[in-house]
Image 1 (tube, rainbow, N blue to C red):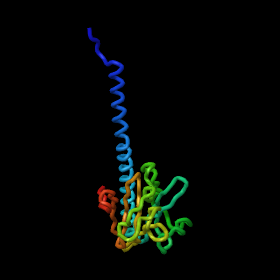
Image 2: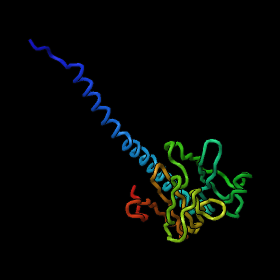
Image 3: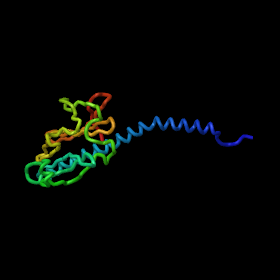
Image 4: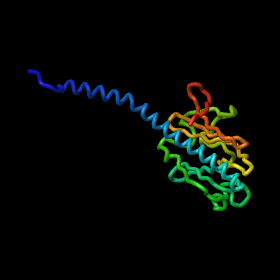
Length: 194
């Protein structure tokens, strides 16, 4: 008479195969999670930059994204010029330039999301002049992407990374915004689609 069920050997073989499949799938799952976190952070950054441009026109004042670091990590705030001389770090710290939104902490999107490039990586700047700064911000001396009431902007770029992925927010002098992704396969910057 034959009994129904599995033998101990069959059960161990099945568990071994499942463990192997799980071990093979884990890196892909982690990469997918990092990519999703980076997409969420890039989308928020792009949306907030668009909002800065709109607020500058509505308020007839300079409005910018100001990047900073505190014990919680890298963040940015949306700041409006409060004294008619443009958005500046000094006026922000003194409370003359008013915070309209934020802070937005990059780590809140995922532990791997941060400003800059993956460790040990060099990437050419999208402008094909020079290299992406390791710190992740190429926006004048102050690290502020500022938009004027006339819809112009301080040109610059902000680079976000998670794992081995890199995304750039580019701001042109006339205020146009673009999101780009570094393609390791093509060794080129390609449009980042949301």
